[in-house]
Length: 85
Image (cartoon, rainbow, N blue to C red; front, side):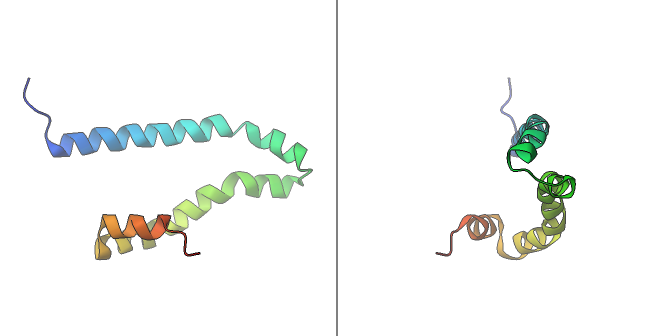
């Protein structure tokens, strides 16, 4: 069996990572109702609890992509994960 090329490995890894992220969102979705009841959230607040991560990810995807193109993946990843405190 020939070795798997770098491009194929990247594609497989990204596909599996995306599948895991989607699975996590699907699994956590029903928990929103329980969390909203525990915290006595209004329906509007419960909706914001559910959609906020999706909206933030959508809005920040373009600037983060630009930063990654400009500074490289390693530096961008470090900057996003670094705690400035």
